[in-house]
Image (tube, rainbow, N blue to C red):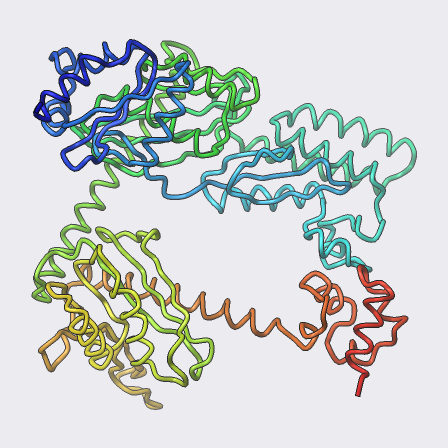
Length: 617
């Protein structure tokens, strides 16, 4: 019977001379690397023949115990399959990127009779126009505010738009032209929409020229109000164009990937250029990798653009990548046939753009390393002062939120190396406790979470004092979980308010955080070690915010329910229309059938049903 090593050699020797995917597996049959090649046999033999000199290869080959091959018809199919398998298996030796968030885009659907501007995170293939991405919520909100001031399109949702019978406050402050009440025709509204598109497409100068002509025409017709509006619009657009930084004469959509490397640590910064104007930058979280920079960039392009990101005309990178042509073909297809070029610039504006991206990547790397060092010092100090068993690289914190036992919820937040890890956030709706019993609520959420948990933290923080801490300890003891540090964190008041002055100062109430530890009567204070205390405060405050937001959501949902929900056939849309029309439930109760029929979306049959519901004895 052949050994595993002999079987592996046979697998490599008999690898197909075809385009496709190869999966390397360890002794536990886990996929540890996924790759693609035009010739699978040639590629996999290079690993075993010493021709591949990448630093990671010796580590990889010492763990490979089996290989699997999947043949494809084209290189593009292999690229797509490789990307899919990397996402599925998350192999240890592949480059995988964690994107901390989706960036904002502005959407407008030109198929609507009266389109509106919307703020969205994901671009969909729905026929609408998208502009962006914007690197921060502040940037995109500032842009939207400007657009709304200059181009007064509607802001309300379709439900509100269809139900409205008189103009809202946006019309009063001249931020909307009230198409909901037919105060502007569809042709005039469409003209403003086209102006918005022209502006967002980067043709500001062309738009100004058009507006000036329309202003002159309006003035010649003695329509001075319209001429004044157009003049103000021209001034606002001109001021905005002066602020925008034009970095490329090509006036194309470009994504520029700047890479900075220090040993096996890699920082990437993505700069967005739209129509020659820099919109902002996106930071890819710092990661550690042993592969070369070309493979890093190749993996990044495939994973980033497969996630639904906007695909520009040009993608600028610093290294020549092996699969450049197939990536261009794949992206062109995703862009519905519009050509996409991956460019490694040697001269001109593109070199300047790449320099900006690389400089930003280096600056981010330096800042990140300093902050990471500071966080490491703080975590070490925290472990030292509290006598923890290990440095708390991973912390989980629990909090309870309720008002007199109503809408009671619990939250858990997770921090890794001092930073929020939102993938580990959990929220709990209290199921077994009635009344305001915080101890029992804490017991419930801890028991529900840790009875099936396999990935345990280094430190558990309970928002509360000695009582809540003891609850946590009893849960862990019941579940036979040991070797985890647990602490309670609570605020303590010092001093009292006073009505007299002492040496010219008013004595005031002061709060200080105290830390409760198991088997210790008195609390510990970390006020002399602010960096260590700040770690705990940040974790506790985030858990409190997360709990309160869930509590408010449940309360709002309950408050929104009314006696109207009891009427068969009345869903959310009809209920909103009824309440918007009458203002409150009491007026609905007193309304006649004829008055109920006037509500948009309520016909004669539904009006009869609503009327009978309130008037049947």
